Amino acid sequence: MSPKSPQKAEWFKHLEYSAVGIEMGLSVAAGALIGHGLDQYLGTKPWMLFLWFFAGVLAGFRALWRTLQKLKESTREDQPPSNPNLSEHGPDPKDD
Image 1 (tube, helix red, strand yellow):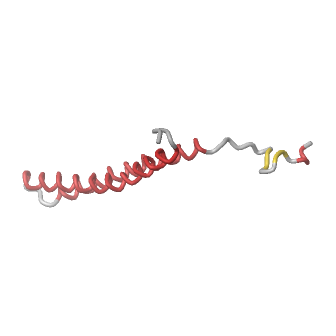
Image 2: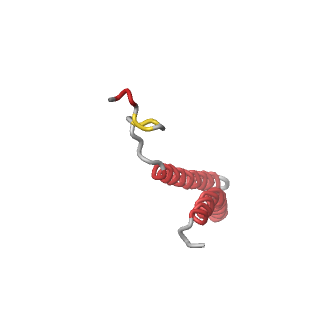
C-alpha cells in the first residue's frame, strides 16, 4: 500500500481527530498538576489549582478549535466549486 493511498490517508485523518480527546484530557490534567504543585509550594491552596485547571480546560478547547478549523478547511478543499448555472443534470434549458 502506497503512503498516498486513500485508505491510509483516511486512517491518518481519524487518528489525528482522535488525538484531540487525548490532548484535551492531558491539558486539564497538566493544568491541575501544575496548580496543585504551586499550591503546595506557595501555600495558596486551592487558588492555583483552580487557576491552572481552568487554564488547562482553555488549552484543551483551543486544541479542539484548531482541529475543527482544520476539518472545515479539508472539507472545503474536497468539494468542487459550485456553479449556480448548472444543475445535477447539466445546464438548465430555460437559460437559453
